[in-house]
Image (cartoon, rainbow, N blue to C red):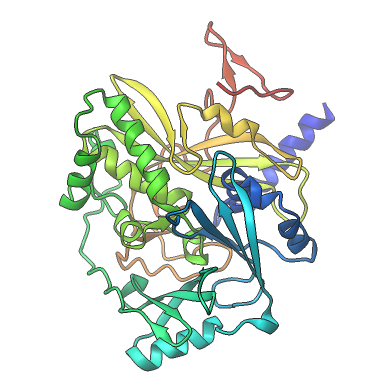
Amino acid sequence: MTRYIFGALLLLIAAVAGAENGPPMDIRLHLAVLHPEVFSHTRFKAWEKDGRKVTAWREEEISADRKQVVVIQGAGPKYASDLLAFQVQLDHKSTVVDVLPFPANIVKLSYSKAAKLVHDKLNVEVTGGLPHIDFNASVPLGWELRFGGGGTGTVKVRGADIAPPTPPVPEEPHPHDCTPGDGDALSQNQLHHPNDPGFRLEALDLVHGISDPKQRAETLCDYVYSNYKYSVSLDTIAYTESDELTRLRGWGACDEKAVILVTFLRAVGIPARLKFLRWIRVGETGTSNEYSHASVEYVVDNVVHYLDPTFHLKDQPEYYRTLTVDESRVTAVKVVDADWPDDFRSTDSVGTEGLPDTDSQDGRLNPWMDFCYQPPNGGDERPRYSFEQDTTGGRRSVTRGCRRN
């Protein structure tokens, strides 16, 4: 009984703590699931043991010989210190083949130096950036910097070299309507642009020759999982960014991947919507113990199906109850239906970092304030996500054990 009372108190505390900005994205769990070879590596464990905290991490492009660089960032996007890069061989079982640390005293190109270089040469204001590591370059640390126009233009810097900038995406007005309707799961809005010819033609090309709607949906999930790299910055942790911004960059966190998949599904006529998950992990210190994740729900022949383009899951919502990081197991899962995004609901600061929310239709929405929710964004327990349902329609507890279909 004590255990259940303790769990209820945790849920209450987390609900209160997350009321304004919502729970943080569970990026360490993402790393543990997607790159266990990095998460369990002695160098990463030692890096954290020295007092560093993972504030962001990203994947680089996969090379021709199936190598990929995973960059761990421990000090926010405007600092070059506390970076740790792993070169991973992607075979049947991924393995770490090389490690590069970037302590502050040996960093040759800091964020501030790169930003000044771009400002002076291109006469633009840099608004943020991400580190890019190349193990084979003479200057391994480079930067992808964002500038002007809502932060949608980018430029890459390595040493004194500046790549030609990618121009900002022009801002276009989008209609906003929080009234639920029959077409919401197929509609276009601030996050999803399924009627855009680029998205529509790409989606149709990907499913060409596939007639079964469920197989079409899973093929699109495979594509998003494989072709959009996982990457987190301060911005992508705080905001949920539109499919247009994510396509421009080619990377995103769990919610950006889910948004892109929803767009592809709607583009081929499959009703789909974004799902925010809120979960509790006990046993951790220094956090509210509540975290968030994003996945996708779609409907074929009046049957609801589930996809996760981050963890590459298909119809396995039970999986979330099996997740464990540092012996801290997920003990509660609640589901939030983010049906009708509307970037006019608030101008409150975004995330625990207090980033400004200008609501200027820049394609960057506050995930806990700029959506029309059903249910409210505290979420509901749902069968399969939160508990198993027996054949008589009842509920079966999984507190003592979890199974994965």
